[in-house]
Picture 1 (cartoon, rainbow, N blue to C red):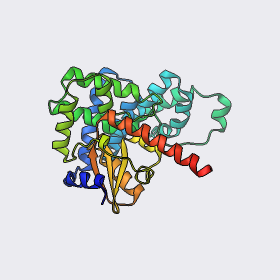
Picture 2: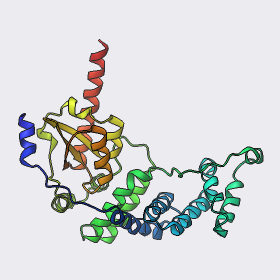
Picture 3: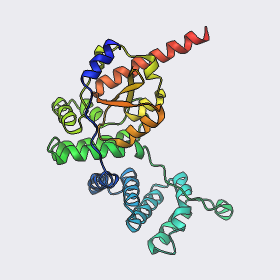
Length: 292
């Protein structure tokens, strides 16, 4: 067993706490409703609330948020998004009068010849990077509820997460990144709280020599957007550094992708970015060596 593996094994995390899907959905609803109080037309928040209510089986509220998304899309003149959503809104017209009005607004975005030939298209509206930040918005809300973020800091974090989600970044959109970028003085305290509450130990990768074999278990674009880095193999087990210890959906996706037992650790944002740079350089060097 390598020296790196021995270091990590001594910090092996307790079994992650089980979080029910319904609980996560309710937490997401609370977080995104807060956003709508400040920004009523935020499409990221509206989409997340639609998804959360749909997950809970509250189809009436889910449909209500879908109609609100349609109205925002119409107001913004987003033709592509309107084209995608129109079929889903038309399917609600027999149930909701507001859906009829929203459908009319969406149809007004499209050329008449397209409307005449248009097949019914139903599907989820892609709004920025909603799926990437829902867990982060929930984390911000949990930190606020636990007293780790005051109201002002929470509002700023939420605003930055929403803004960053619309940008093309080569690092994840995360609460820890926002706090670090803002120069927050309580980042270490928040990391300690997260480690205690989740059972995921804080780990520093500065003392590790990253293994290409381990890092290559996940695609680089996935690591740049998701907030998970495999950094060491310990026999058949894999050690994973994450930015959000409560993102159970990401953890399940990582385990399914890698197909091996995974142990998760909490990593500061600055170290995550430094590790990404090293991994990108290693992968580039390996690709060049293979060409020779």
